[in-house]
Length: 459
Image 1 (cartoon, helix red, strand yellow):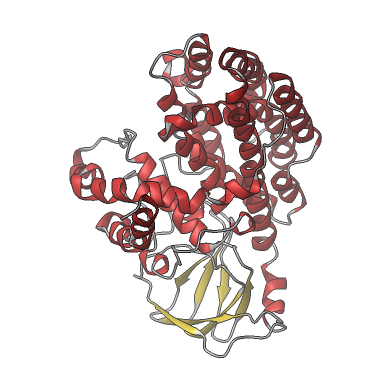
Image 2 (cartoon, helix red, strand yellow; image 1 turned 60 degrees about the vertical axis):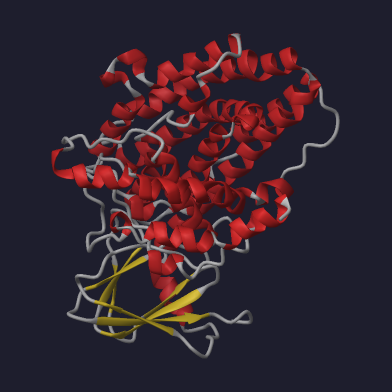
């Protein structure tokens, strides 16, 4: 068997392995919308996962597709199993879950699947990013300065959507949840690049790492001050409380840095990516402070944002001068394309974060109009029926194509944001769900059936 055919055989069995993983008792979910303070349990929606075509990687324009969301939920779980997660309240009641999450059965499924799943999730980057051309430190720096200036001068689509929303508080909370994906486990991916021996650049990267960890002072740790921001909004602060509301774009953004950090052959790409991220964080947090102060006044703790708006200017200088350009100068033109690719990929994936979050805010803020739109589109002939009770496990999903959800029996709540009011649906009510939009349905009657109608292309 050739290497290529062996890889194809691995990919063909990928779907079976990841469904086996997702059917673990840890990942079946329960009837609650938010996850309890147990970092080992998270809803992977195995029945919806089984619909995914894992022989067809998402293209660059399909990053919000259902199979992309499913893949990145799995990858995030795989990556976190290589970190230490312990519940704040203590492990005593959760030893069995701890043993299962870190145990050999799930570990073998992860280790036999992760490389193929990474190829599936990130293959689109190969075609979406072109770094051909002159490979010199001067070209690298010119490109870097150009894309950073572009980011600094352009508005954030997600923050613009928050500012324009009718329910700005719920929109802002949805944005916070996307930040929580990294904010409550900050710098975990970076830690995988700190070991070894690679000179002054290693020390420069470590400066940033110890800043993130508050120089060993827990109250100054960035995850601690992020939790203060959540508490000021009366939101849960434990890891993955809002798992059901992470979007595909933010999941991909978070996973990307783990993906690069897991394979040290991609170290130079990581160096480019983290340099871009640190450079654009500071102006993004300045903009976030303005939007959130306009909505909440002094009733929100923005210490985390103020800290990043300040410290990330410093981190941006360190990574550009002491990591990116220093690596290019020390190791020569052969590493420049990888450094540049990291910058370009981080820019692209950061755009996924912004666009996905903005689209979810706009849709969830405009559900009455999407009720009306449900009656104007052409539907496919054979809808799929889903039966629920109040005890059914709650999970969220999206679809690769637009769908119309119609309640056939009973009553339900359509849930599209972590803190906003649900959309109540009675028998006969319908709503258009655009491709890529995240939603969950909870029965408010003893029994509820709803139909999922595919929207035909000319609908």
